[in-house]
Image (cartoon, rainbow, N blue to C red; front, top):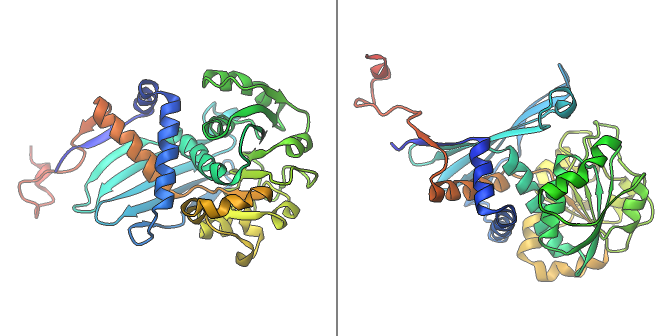
Amino acid sequence: MAATRILTDECIAGIVREVGLDAIMDEVIGCLADSFAEHEPDVVQTIARSGFRYIKPDLGLIEWMPAMVAGSKVAIKTVGYHPSNPVERNAPSVLAATALYDTADGRLLALCDASLLTAIRTGAASAVVTDVLAVDGPITLGMIGCGAQAVTQIHAVSRVRPIERVLAYDADDLVAATLGTRLAGAGLDIPLHIVDGAARVVADADVLCTATSVDPEAGPVFRDGPHRPGVHVNAVGADLPGKFELPRELLDRSVIVPDHREQCLAEGESQRLDSVAIGPDMCEVVRHRDRFVELRDRPTVFDSTGWALEDLVAADVALAHAERLGRGLSIDLQPHPRDPYNPYESLRS
């Protein structure tokens, strides 16, 4: 049995620095688009995420997100979401790790930090759907929620549409004030306007992204109001039962595109809708993009709860570069016994 490759956060960061942030984002966008268009549920099987949700010591959750490529490998991402982390612990609100297993023998192929990969793949998924459903040409991008995910949402959308300006709002003025510095650190030279209310963001956006840490039952994060007729919304903040960002009235007049239908009905924007009110899923939209570009004159909502297939793709991208560049640590994490029937063999000196 071969060794297990370990990719720490610094290993992932080193790969991104060497390959280039734009190049990695473009690669993940392209790989996701191909995976969605070619998705066959019998070949790539996923299960709606599950896990533990709690309110003590703080509101949080730890969930697992499994995906299997039949006859090849299983990827299981374990992700923790703790919205108090940035303020209370100076830590990201999302921390994750992905384990890949060989379905031939059950061997642990790799274990990699997935915190940065989760942010990149979430932005990349929005970009894939935006590329199909958003108006052509230069756009105004609206951003409600200026935390960590705002950076990757703006970056990813900029790879599929030229952005003339970003209008951004956050309930926390201090978080909003640092968004420009974080975008500049990502090499994004886009005019940024921090506004004092969500209504203007919604009214002027061609593409609207919502990525907030609103508490369950505290939404929506903006009131229904005027918006552009063909606005496309990437709603990425709903990830708990009772947590939602968009006003129901906007949902009712929009075409809703879920990433994972079962998941979205449980904890996405779609949890407030009957299943018959939900439109085509992400894979269908990408697979038949020529048919769905006709929706660009209508409001559309990408209900993005995060799909395990996205984590498998992101991990594959990172591991391919790690192997090519010789990054990461290969260790004998699991047994290589002479006698596979003796569980105590490793206890011998």
